Image (cartoon, rainbow, N blue to C red; front, side, top):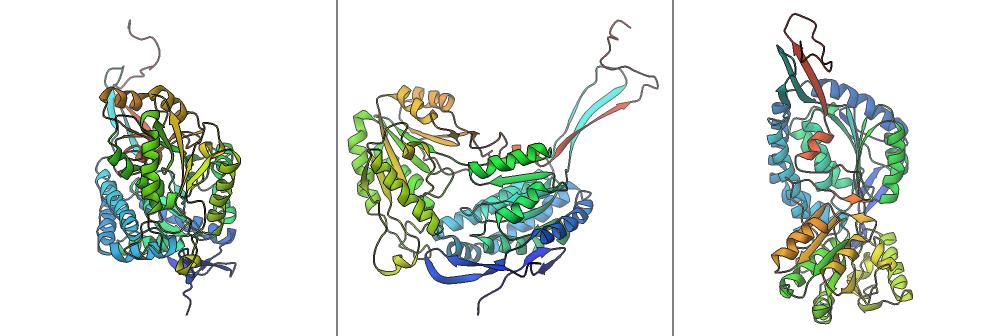
Length: 497
């Protein structure tokens, strides 16, 4: 019998007001139906907001260290349920089990880090310019945080947003991607089991164009955090700007790994295979471009093609699988379209470029790891985010050339440089126009206690993770205490008095 799931609104699991549901299927085997999930409407969101307002009134007055204790328990429960959640996540998202275990581990790390921040929501006490007067600041909650999350990290990214928002004293409404609703359902179960007051978290499934849009437009949701495409993020930004909402955008990437003539090519090979084809290329930090210095270009291209061609495709729950499926049919079609674009622009499909045939792979949305050779700066496959197992290889003459090519895209999330030259490494740290730069490591692999995000059309200046995200989910209040017993006039020239 097919499982039918519900929203979590007003402290209970509840059916959608629309009475409508959508199917959640395994991208490695489209015949495998995971369950039916609510296709919610605006009425469901209105109920969720009303409940979240009640939850905020209570939770915002709970001392931050106590809020941290709840998140500590969340982390402990995730440790206990790690394998169960990872296997469920692989089934609905497709990436290999080793990666979904890592996805859960990111959530665990984020929970434990957030718990410590309950005792570290620092303000400042500074000297006043006037006598007998104190001046200080502190952090306080904002309200309801509307969290719109993507498919590629079904648990980790929701925790990046949810845990800091909760630690700061906000209530949250989660709207997960339609492709991965079950993972967030499991996360909400964990939050409730850990003792989070039920009104503090709401889970509203449904379409981004309906539920997500209504949340962005609603005046009682003052915080929006969105991870997704640059195009959608731009539209959200327009709405939030007009409504004076606090907004964090984490959007696209066209990340480059640079390999210099002096690089350890075996190390660089492992890095590019993981960066380009891990998660089937479905990461905003995926290595989409490989920029190689001329002296090692041909040799390294051959090394990449030989190894990539041997990568094993299959269901993520199979221990032998190295590359899982794309998330859905439209994603695979998009990759196929870019293969055609690459050929039209004069690039060569060095390996891959087609669907695998035969056997179980035909039941899922699989596509061969693909390498484009002879790519020139400015080609669409060098400029545009493909979000699949496709790698564009560009030949350059020197580091100056490599930096120019890296920077000449509209995105600026992640970059990587492989070299043994310490001077080149430090120059790259400064000159590569990205929010993240790795030296002798691929473009993927963020750590929970460091800020994550990019520049240009990758984001709007805010960061997920680390210490900076706690500033996003809280407001600074400044307090002056004058105990002089007289009227003192700040910012007036009183120094001669």
